[in-house]
Length: 394
Image (cartoon, rainbow, N blue to C red; front, top):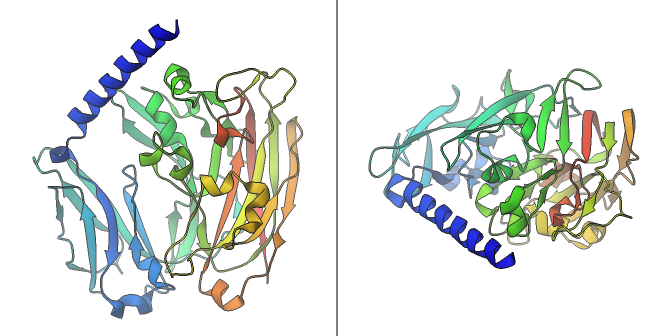
Protein backbone atom coordinates (compact mmCIF):
# COMPACT_ATOMS: atom_id res chain seq x y z
CA UNK A 1 0.00 0.00 0.00
CA UNK A 2 2.81 2.41 0.93
CA UNK A 3 4.60 1.54 -2.32
CA UNK A 4 1.45 2.33 -4.32
CA UNK A 5 1.16 5.67 -2.50
CA UNK A 6 4.76 6.50 -3.35
CA UNK A 7 4.25 5.67 -7.03
CA UNK A 8 1.10 7.79 -7.20
CA UNK A 9 2.78 10.64 -5.30
CA UNK A 10 5.81 10.62 -7.62
CA UNK A 11 3.47 10.68 -10.59
CA UNK A 12 1.53 13.58 -9.09
CA UNK A 13 4.73 15.49 -8.43
CA UNK A 14 5.86 14.94 -12.02
CA UNK A 15 2.53 16.25 -13.25
CA UNK A 16 2.82 19.31 -11.00
CA UNK A 17 6.40 19.94 -12.13
CA UNK A 18 5.37 19.59 -15.77
CA UNK A 19 2.48 21.96 -15.17
CA UNK A 20 4.74 24.50 -13.47
CA UNK A 21 7.21 24.35 -16.34
CA UNK A 22 4.40 24.86 -18.79
CA UNK A 23 2.52 27.58 -16.91
CA UNK A 24 5.39 29.38 -15.21
CA UNK A 25 8.16 29.32 -17.80
CA UNK A 26 10.32 32.46 -17.51
CA UNK A 27 9.04 33.95 -20.77
CA UNK A 28 5.44 33.84 -19.47
CA UNK A 29 5.97 35.39 -16.04
CA UNK A 30 4.90 38.99 -15.46
CA UNK A 31 5.37 39.77 -11.76
CA UNK A 32 6.78 42.67 -9.76
CA UNK A 33 9.20 41.09 -7.27
CA UNK A 34 10.27 44.25 -5.42
CA UNK A 35 9.80 48.02 -5.60
CA UNK A 36 11.68 50.98 -4.13
CA UNK A 37 12.00 54.76 -4.18
CA UNK A 38 15.42 55.81 -5.44
CA UNK A 39 17.41 58.65 -3.90
CA UNK A 40 18.23 59.68 -0.33
CA UNK A 41 16.62 63.08 -0.94
CA UNK A 42 13.24 61.34 -0.71
CA UNK A 43 13.85 59.96 2.80
CA UNK A 44 12.25 63.10 4.25
CA UNK A 45 8.82 61.88 3.14
CA UNK A 46 9.05 58.63 5.11
CA UNK A 47 9.15 57.85 8.82
CA UNK A 48 12.03 55.43 8.24
CA UNK A 49 14.29 54.69 5.25
CA UNK A 50 13.25 51.04 5.37
CA UNK A 51 9.73 52.11 4.35
CA UNK A 52 11.10 53.24 0.99
CA UNK A 53 11.42 49.60 -0.13
CA UNK A 54 8.97 46.75 -0.64
CA UNK A 55 10.90 43.49 -0.81
CA UNK A 56 9.64 40.02 -1.71
CA UNK A 57 6.28 41.11 -3.08
CA UNK A 58 3.99 38.09 -3.18
CA UNK A 59 2.97 36.79 -6.61
CA UNK A 60 -0.63 36.92 -5.36
CA UNK A 61 -0.44 40.66 -4.59
CA UNK A 62 -1.66 43.39 -6.95
CA UNK A 63 -1.81 46.34 -4.52
CA UNK A 64 1.50 47.93 -3.48
CA UNK A 65 1.25 50.63 -0.80
CA UNK A 66 3.99 52.98 0.41
CA UNK A 67 3.31 54.81 3.68
CA UNK A 68 4.45 58.44 3.88
CA UNK A 69 4.28 61.20 6.49
CA UNK A 70 1.99 63.45 4.44
CA UNK A 71 0.50 63.51 0.97
CA UNK A 72 0.23 67.32 1.11
CA UNK A 73 4.00 67.79 1.21
CA UNK A 74 4.90 64.81 -1.02
CA UNK A 75 6.82 65.60 -4.19
CA UNK A 76 4.83 65.21 -7.41
CA UNK A 77 7.92 63.75 -9.08
CA UNK A 78 8.82 60.45 -7.40
CA UNK A 79 11.10 57.91 -9.15
CA UNK A 80 9.89 54.40 -8.41
CA UNK A 81 12.07 51.46 -9.42
CA UNK A 82 11.09 47.82 -9.87
CA UNK A 83 12.61 44.38 -10.06
CA UNK A 84 10.42 42.30 -12.37
CA UNK A 85 10.60 38.73 -13.65
CA UNK A 86 13.24 37.96 -16.28
CA UNK A 87 12.44 39.17 -19.76
CA UNK A 88 9.30 41.07 -18.77
CA UNK A 89 8.68 44.77 -19.39
CA UNK A 90 6.86 47.37 -17.29
CA UNK A 91 4.85 50.46 -18.21
CA UNK A 92 5.30 53.20 -17.02
CA UNK A 93 9.02 52.50 -17.09
CA UNK A 94 10.99 51.65 -13.98
CA UNK A 95 12.61 54.80 -12.61
CA UNK A 96 10.27 57.19 -14.41
CA UNK A 97 8.98 60.16 -12.42
CA UNK A 98 5.34 59.82 -11.31
CA UNK A 99 2.80 61.87 -9.37
CA UNK A 100 1.33 59.75 -6.55
CA UNK A 101 -0.48 62.62 -4.83
CA UNK A 102 -3.61 62.18 -6.97
CA UNK A 103 -4.20 58.50 -6.21
CA UNK A 104 -2.92 55.11 -7.38
CA UNK A 105 -0.64 54.86 -10.41
CA UNK A 106 -1.38 51.77 -12.51
CA UNK A 107 1.64 49.78 -13.71
CA UNK A 108 1.32 47.02 -16.31
CA UNK A 109 3.86 44.19 -16.49
CA UNK A 110 4.00 42.26 -19.78
CA UNK A 111 5.67 38.86 -20.12
CA UNK A 112 8.61 38.37 -22.46
CA UNK A 113 6.47 36.57 -25.06
CA UNK A 114 3.84 39.31 -24.91
CA UNK A 115 1.00 36.91 -24.16
CA UNK A 116 0.53 37.67 -20.45
CA UNK A 117 -0.13 40.95 -18.66
CA UNK A 118 -0.64 41.89 -15.03
CA UNK A 119 -1.65 45.25 -13.59
CA UNK A 120 -0.60 46.67 -10.22
CA UNK A 121 -2.06 49.61 -8.31
CA UNK A 122 0.79 51.47 -6.60
CA UNK A 123 -0.35 53.90 -3.91
CA UNK A 124 1.41 56.43 -1.69
CA UNK A 125 -0.76 57.26 1.31
CA UNK A 126 -0.40 58.80 4.72
CA UNK A 127 0.19 56.22 7.39
CA UNK A 128 -3.25 55.67 8.95
CA UNK A 129 -3.77 56.12 12.67
CA UNK A 130 -3.66 52.85 14.62
CA UNK A 131 -6.96 51.04 14.27
CA UNK A 132 -8.74 50.78 17.61
CA UNK A 133 -11.64 48.56 16.57
CA UNK A 134 -11.94 45.63 14.17
CA UNK A 135 -15.49 44.63 13.29
CA UNK A 136 -14.71 42.53 10.18
CA UNK A 137 -17.47 44.14 8.13
CA UNK A 138 -15.29 44.75 5.09
CA UNK A 139 -14.42 41.86 2.81
CA UNK A 140 -13.88 41.29 -0.88
CA UNK A 141 -13.76 38.13 -2.95
CA UNK A 142 -10.45 37.23 -4.56
CA UNK A 143 -10.46 35.02 -7.65
CA UNK A 144 -7.50 32.89 -8.68
CA UNK A 145 -7.05 30.38 -11.48
CA UNK A 146 -5.85 26.93 -10.48
CA UNK A 147 -3.29 24.70 -12.19
CA UNK A 148 -6.12 22.37 -13.21
CA UNK A 149 -7.99 25.14 -14.98
CA UNK A 150 -10.58 25.84 -12.29
CA UNK A 151 -11.19 29.02 -10.34
CA UNK A 152 -10.91 29.48 -6.58
CA UNK A 153 -12.78 32.23 -4.75
CA UNK A 154 -11.64 33.24 -1.28
CA UNK A 155 -12.23 36.17 1.07
CA UNK A 156 -9.80 39.01 1.72
CA UNK A 157 -10.41 41.10 4.86
CA UNK A 158 -9.59 44.81 5.06
CA UNK A 159 -10.25 47.87 7.19
CA UNK A 160 -11.32 51.38 6.19
CA UNK A 161 -8.94 54.05 7.45
CA UNK A 162 -8.76 57.80 6.99
CA UNK A 163 -5.82 58.94 4.89
CA UNK A 164 -5.16 62.30 3.22
CA UNK A 165 -8.68 63.48 3.93
CA UNK A 166 -10.31 60.45 2.32
CA UNK A 167 -11.28 56.95 3.41
CA UNK A 168 -9.03 54.23 1.98
CA UNK A 169 -9.03 50.42 2.22
CA UNK A 170 -6.26 49.13 4.46
CA UNK A 171 -5.31 45.54 3.56
CA UNK A 172 -3.71 44.86 6.93
CA UNK A 173 -5.15 41.35 7.42
CA UNK A 174 -3.65 38.16 5.99
CA UNK A 175 -4.66 34.50 5.99
CA UNK A 176 -3.22 31.19 4.85
CA UNK A 177 -6.02 30.78 2.32
CA UNK A 178 -3.69 31.35 -0.63
CA UNK A 179 -1.51 28.44 0.48
CA UNK A 180 -4.53 26.21 1.08
CA UNK A 181 -5.72 26.99 -2.46
CA UNK A 182 -2.84 24.90 -3.83
CA UNK A 183 -4.79 21.78 -2.84
CA UNK A 184 -8.16 23.13 -4.09
CA UNK A 185 -9.83 23.42 -7.49
CA UNK A 186 -12.95 25.46 -8.12
CA UNK A 187 -13.81 26.24 -4.49
CA UNK A 188 -16.00 28.92 -2.91
CA UNK A 189 -15.00 31.15 0.05
CA UNK A 190 -16.80 29.02 2.63
CA UNK A 191 -14.68 26.01 1.59
CA UNK A 192 -11.52 27.75 2.81
CA UNK A 193 -10.21 27.72 6.41
CA UNK A 194 -10.91 31.46 6.85
CA UNK A 195 -13.96 33.28 5.52
CA UNK A 196 -16.54 35.97 6.28
CA UNK A 197 -19.99 35.10 7.58
CA UNK A 198 -23.05 37.27 8.39
CA UNK A 199 -23.54 35.47 11.73
CA UNK A 200 -21.52 37.91 13.82
CA UNK A 201 -22.23 39.38 17.19
CA UNK A 202 -22.86 42.59 15.29
CA UNK A 203 -23.16 42.33 11.52
CA UNK A 204 -20.50 40.17 9.89
CA UNK A 205 -17.66 38.31 11.57
CA UNK A 206 -14.74 36.08 10.65
CA UNK A 207 -15.01 32.28 10.78
CA UNK A 208 -11.88 30.16 11.18
CA UNK A 209 -12.12 26.39 10.84
CA UNK A 210 -9.54 23.62 10.73
CA UNK A 211 -9.72 21.58 7.53
CA UNK A 212 -8.08 18.60 5.89
CA UNK A 213 -5.62 19.37 3.10
CA UNK A 214 -6.45 16.07 1.42
CA UNK A 215 -4.23 13.27 0.23
CA UNK A 216 -1.59 15.62 -1.18
CA UNK A 217 -1.29 17.48 2.14
CA UNK A 218 -1.04 14.24 4.08
CA UNK A 219 1.76 12.97 1.86
CA UNK A 220 3.90 16.06 2.38
CA UNK A 221 3.39 16.08 6.16
CA UNK A 222 0.88 18.96 6.19
CA UNK A 223 -2.42 17.07 6.66
CA UNK A 224 -4.46 19.93 8.15
CA UNK A 225 -4.84 23.66 7.70
CA UNK A 226 -6.05 25.65 10.69
CA UNK A 227 -8.18 28.71 10.06
CA UNK A 228 -6.01 31.73 10.76
CA UNK A 229 -6.17 35.50 10.51
CA UNK A 230 -3.35 37.88 11.42
CA UNK A 231 -2.07 41.41 10.98
CA UNK A 232 0.71 41.07 8.43
CA UNK A 233 1.36 39.40 5.10
CA UNK A 234 1.36 35.90 3.63
CA UNK A 235 4.01 34.92 1.06
CA UNK A 236 2.64 31.98 -0.89
CA UNK A 237 6.04 31.34 -2.53
CA UNK A 238 7.25 29.61 0.66
CA UNK A 239 4.22 27.38 1.26
CA UNK A 240 5.73 24.14 -0.06
CA UNK A 241 9.39 24.80 0.85
CA UNK A 242 9.16 26.57 4.22
CA UNK A 243 5.57 27.04 5.41
CA UNK A 244 6.56 28.90 8.59
CA UNK A 245 8.47 31.51 6.57
CA UNK A 246 5.33 32.24 4.54
CA UNK A 247 3.77 34.16 7.41
CA UNK A 248 5.19 37.67 7.98
CA UNK A 249 3.60 39.06 11.13
CA UNK A 250 2.99 42.71 11.93
CA UNK A 251 2.07 46.16 10.65
CA UNK A 252 3.65 49.50 11.69
CA UNK A 253 1.96 51.43 14.49
CA UNK A 254 2.64 54.78 16.14
CA UNK A 255 1.13 53.86 19.51
CA UNK A 256 1.98 51.33 22.22
CA UNK A 257 -0.80 48.78 22.91
CA UNK A 258 -1.81 47.85 26.45
CA UNK A 259 -4.96 45.71 26.10
CA UNK A 260 -7.02 43.89 23.46
CA UNK A 261 -10.51 42.44 23.92
CA UNK A 262 -13.22 40.95 21.75
CA UNK A 263 -15.95 38.34 21.36
CA UNK A 264 -15.76 34.70 20.28
CA UNK A 265 -17.56 31.39 19.82
CA UNK A 266 -15.64 28.11 19.68
CA UNK A 267 -16.29 24.43 19.07
CA UNK A 268 -13.32 22.00 18.98
CA UNK A 269 -13.26 19.18 16.42
CA UNK A 270 -13.88 15.61 17.47
CA UNK A 271 -10.57 13.84 16.71
CA UNK A 272 -7.17 15.33 17.53
CA UNK A 273 -4.33 14.28 15.20
CA UNK A 274 -0.64 15.10 14.70
CA UNK A 275 1.25 15.80 11.47
CA UNK A 276 1.36 12.06 10.76
CA UNK A 277 -2.42 11.81 11.27
CA UNK A 278 -1.92 9.75 14.42
CA UNK A 279 -5.05 10.03 16.57
CA UNK A 280 -5.03 11.13 20.23
CA UNK A 281 -8.43 10.26 21.76
CA UNK A 282 -7.59 11.91 25.10
CA UNK A 283 -6.56 15.29 23.64
CA UNK A 284 -8.90 18.16 22.80
CA UNK A 285 -8.10 20.92 20.33
CA UNK A 286 -7.73 24.51 21.55
CA UNK A 287 -8.13 27.85 19.80
CA UNK A 288 -5.47 30.53 20.09
CA UNK A 289 -5.44 34.35 20.33
CA UNK A 290 -2.27 36.35 20.96
CA UNK A 291 -0.53 39.60 20.01
CA UNK A 292 3.10 40.72 19.74
CA UNK A 293 4.62 44.20 19.76
CA UNK A 294 8.15 44.29 18.34
CA UNK A 295 10.88 46.52 16.85
CA UNK A 296 10.62 46.51 13.06
CA UNK A 297 14.27 47.23 12.25
CA UNK A 298 17.30 45.28 13.42
CA UNK A 299 20.62 46.50 14.81
CA UNK A 300 21.88 47.07 11.25
CA UNK A 301 18.90 49.24 10.33
CA UNK A 302 17.38 46.57 8.09
CA UNK A 303 13.65 45.77 8.01
CA UNK A 304 12.68 43.03 10.44
CA UNK A 305 9.60 40.81 10.44
CA UNK A 306 8.61 38.03 12.81
CA UNK A 307 7.68 34.88 10.92
CA UNK A 308 6.25 31.48 11.81
CA UNK A 309 9.62 30.21 13.03
CA UNK A 310 9.71 32.93 15.70
CA UNK A 311 6.10 32.30 16.75
CA UNK A 312 6.71 28.56 17.17
CA UNK A 313 8.43 29.41 20.45
CA UNK A 314 5.67 31.63 21.79
CA UNK A 315 6.49 30.85 25.43
CA UNK A 316 10.02 32.18 24.92
CA UNK A 317 9.15 35.03 22.59
CA UNK A 318 10.20 37.73 25.06
CA UNK A 319 13.74 36.32 24.86
CA UNK A 320 13.88 37.71 21.32
CA UNK A 321 15.63 41.13 21.63
CA UNK A 322 13.34 42.55 18.93
CA UNK A 323 10.21 41.74 20.97
CA UNK A 324 9.06 44.25 23.59
CA UNK A 325 5.60 43.02 24.62
CA UNK A 326 3.37 39.95 24.27
CA UNK A 327 -0.31 39.41 25.11
CA UNK A 328 -2.12 36.06 25.20
CA UNK A 329 -5.57 34.74 26.00
CA UNK A 330 -5.03 31.99 28.57
CA UNK A 331 -7.92 29.79 27.42
CA UNK A 332 -10.98 29.86 25.19
CA UNK A 333 -13.55 27.38 26.58
CA UNK A 334 -15.95 25.89 24.06
CA UNK A 335 -19.17 27.90 23.75
CA UNK A 336 -21.96 28.11 21.18
CA UNK A 337 -22.96 31.61 22.33
CA UNK A 338 -20.89 34.79 22.08
CA UNK A 339 -18.48 35.20 25.00
CA UNK A 340 -15.95 37.95 25.72
CA UNK A 341 -12.19 37.56 25.92
CA UNK A 342 -9.42 39.99 26.84
CA UNK A 343 -5.65 40.01 27.17
CA UNK A 344 -3.06 42.45 28.52
CA UNK A 345 0.44 43.13 27.20
CA UNK A 346 3.40 42.18 29.34
CA UNK A 347 7.04 43.11 28.78
CA UNK A 348 9.19 46.24 28.62
CA UNK A 349 8.15 49.74 27.69
CA UNK A 350 9.19 51.09 24.30
CA UNK A 351 11.07 54.40 23.75
CA UNK A 352 8.53 57.13 22.93
CA UNK A 353 10.53 58.67 20.09
CA UNK A 354 10.86 55.33 18.27
CA UNK A 355 7.18 54.54 18.86
CA UNK A 356 6.07 57.85 17.32
CA UNK A 357 8.37 57.26 14.34
CA UNK A 358 6.57 53.96 13.70
CA UNK A 359 9.59 51.93 14.69
CA UNK A 360 7.40 49.13 16.05
CA UNK A 361 5.06 46.57 14.51
CA UNK A 362 1.95 45.10 16.07
CA UNK A 363 0.51 41.74 15.11
CA UNK A 364 -2.71 40.14 16.32
CA UNK A 365 -3.19 36.44 15.58
CA UNK A 366 -6.28 34.20 15.65
CA UNK A 367 -6.22 30.44 15.00
CA UNK A 368 -8.82 27.68 15.23
CA UNK A 369 -6.09 25.20 16.30
CA UNK A 370 -3.40 26.27 18.76
CA UNK A 371 -0.78 24.02 17.19
CA UNK A 372 -1.98 24.47 13.64
CA UNK A 373 1.43 25.84 12.62
CA UNK A 374 2.80 22.38 13.51
CA UNK A 375 -0.08 20.75 11.57
CA UNK A 376 -1.63 19.39 14.74
CA UNK A 377 -5.26 19.82 15.73
CA UNK A 378 -8.75 18.50 15.07
CA UNK A 379 -10.49 18.78 11.72
CA UNK A 380 -13.74 20.66 12.24
CA UNK A 381 -12.52 22.97 15.03
CA UNK A 382 -14.33 26.27 14.46
CA UNK A 383 -13.62 29.71 15.92
CA UNK A 384 -15.74 32.84 15.34
CA UNK A 385 -14.26 36.28 16.11
CA UNK A 386 -15.98 39.68 16.18
CA UNK A 387 -15.86 43.21 17.64
CA UNK A 388 -12.19 43.37 18.60
CA UNK A 389 -11.05 46.45 20.56
CA UNK A 390 -7.42 47.61 20.95
CA UNK A 391 -6.47 50.02 23.76
CA UNK A 392 -3.27 52.04 23.45
CA UNK A 393 -1.13 54.12 25.78
CA UNK A 394 -2.34 57.71 25.84
